[in-house]
Amino acid sequence: MSLEIENQVKLLEEQLKQLQGKQAKDQISIIVFSGDLDKVLASMIIATGARAMDMEVKMFFTFWGTTMLRDKHKSGKGKDLMSKMFGFMLPKGSSQLKLSKLNMCGMGTEMLKGLMKKKNVSSLEELMKIAAELGVEINICQMSMDLMGFKKEEMIDYPNLNYCGVATYLADADESRVQLFI
Amino acid sequence: MTNDELKSLTSDKTVDARGTACPGPLLAAKKAVADIQAGQIMEILSSDEGTKSDIPKWCKKMNYEYFGSIDEDGMYRLFLKK
Image (tube, rainbow over all chains, first blue to last red; front, side, top):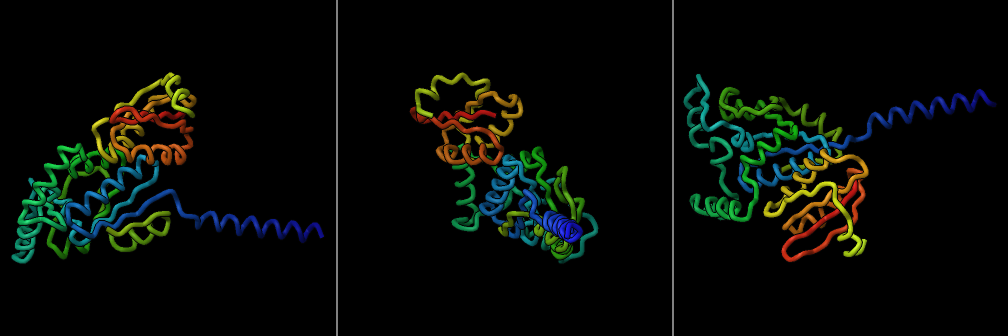
């Protein structure tokens, strides 16, 4: 009888261990698909806020989102014609992003930036600096980079920057308690 | 805590986050709380009304004791114990 109980306890302990291994971490995964100023701004506010709440933060920039991570002062070498054209047409970094609504040929975007300054809302550039200090991890989709013809040497300097594929996102999202697609 | 009780507290540290918007006060609080010891009291000054909802939630998450807030013309004083 006691042997049976002992075996049952062992079995339960094993199952408990398995369950604990599967439990989601205090972590948030954010996909930034959009390259619109307002949406990227929201994602950075959430990311920095989550770090203040002591959550691990993993951001995945894909598609139009990758344009915000380009460095205005850098350029990629050895691009073909299409890549050059894409590079020219797309925003080069955070300062060139536009609003998703009321852009009005850039007038709306400038108006919002003025308002943000007046009301002491942190700019995207300031939030990026804070995110770097707080240890927000940024992953860039390699496929988007290749598709748009962006080179690694034209991306921003950021302490926690990695290039990855979809499996990295899925593995991290699987461990995260909160997931967002922006 | 009542307003009078809150007013009688002596803070070991005061963070002035007035003038900043979300997530400014939260980030300022997070930075400042590293400077105090467990058991010490911190006061946060904010002009952003959202802070009144954010700081109690943050305290709960971080296991700090939230005492309450006082509204003073145009600003909020929030108290917590680490």
